[in-house]
Amino acid sequence: MNLAHWLARRSKEDPFRPALFSGRTLVSDYGGFDMQARAVASWLLGQGVGPGDRVAIFMKNIPDYLVVLFGIWYAGAAAVPVNAKLHGREADYILDDADAKIVFASASQGASLSGGRPVISVPGDAYRAILRSDPVAEIAPRDTAELAWLFYTSGTTGKPKGVIITHGMLLSMALCYRADVDQVLSTDAALYAAPLSHGAGLYTLMHVQAGARHVCPVSGGFDVAEIMELASHFTGVHMFAAPTMVKRMTDGAKAAGWDGSGLRTVVYGGGPMYNADIIQAVDQFGAVFVQIYGQGECPMGITALPREVVSDRDHPAWRHRLASVGRAQSAVEVQIGDANGAAVPAGQPGEIMVRGQTVMQGYWNNPEATAKTLREGWLMTGDIGVMDQQGFVTLQDRSKDVIISGGSNVYPREVEEVLLQHADVAEASVVGRTHPEWGEVIVAFVVGTAPEAELDALCLAQIARFKRPKEYIRLPELPKNNYGKVLKTELRKLLG
Image (cartoon, rainbow, N blue to C red; front, side, top):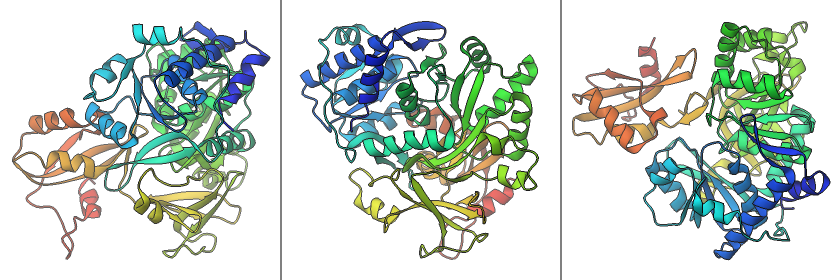
């Protein structure tokens, strides 16, 4: 089933229900949302975009993001949402790998691209003309096994890989949300303060199905004062937030004397949440928090820790359960495996494995990576964890060296390769340092005499700003094992 049917049905049932907002301003009702998405689909078909073709979205959070996303689906094409914070060079790689036919982009994002394919600036005159196209009458049929969303993540090499996310996977994710995470009401308002290219964008689906309101902050991103104002205005507000965002919201609310009025649900995930931080958040806002654990390869869909567990302080094991990421969602099986993938007893650490309806079919044009990650139907997450007798999964470590800073993944080798381009850098190794606000910040150990200002400039010219090291530490040489591999465990010890 094509997921665009959910918007079409909602439009038929209640066309005048408010749908899209920019801040407090109503931009479109569901009838208008539907017609605009159909116009985008009509224009795409007229440009020769067919079922299964990839169309990229390189945009900041604005209401038209949802119009373009559903327009792509109406046409039977697949969306390639690209993080708006990426450097143009990084986005170009994704667009080339996906063979995107057309790109819808915010002005600054579009200007950063090298060219080679049509770029539609949103908003802009060309886009406004697209919205005047005759809307398509029918939704292109799509099977549940067909591509809906090509999500680009990165592995230990730092080279982005496209995760094949199908209509069926997103259907499973959305239904599990209602079963395991939260109910969605027509009176709710989804507030998109986290990037729509990631989890927040996936969560548009169940809110469209329910006929909820969709609110994009005027700032286009995360601003605590703006969130407080919008939540108080709309009420029934749902949002997805990285743990660092939750902490910043808590600190801002304490300073402003805000008790979270207007917030109904805050789903957090995408990085480690410290017990002290979520305890303070619950004390400030009440029982509004739900934790999820997922990966691009199983989007938002591995485990869930419901609000009643997050807020419970009476259970004798409440601290242990709060430190977990919850239990398996309804459409998947989760187990802890040894080096061979065999299940280990409860309480014993191993690699977290998951299989089921929400798990990917594989990586885009990358059979080697697919074979390594999918074994006999199981997704090997690369995360180390423990499952107790009640099924609560606790993350212990990441087997990969991914740094999670402010909810965004940073892959060390990608940064290292940029630093090593400087003539006065002999060696470089990047690790994460624990940070109370951002979760982790990026630290680069460098062998060489290159000035920090030049290293900063090199990074800013080639990778996103959030990936730039926040600190450089000089060493005469990097610690290595007998095989010449850099010992990042030793580097982390140097951080104290």
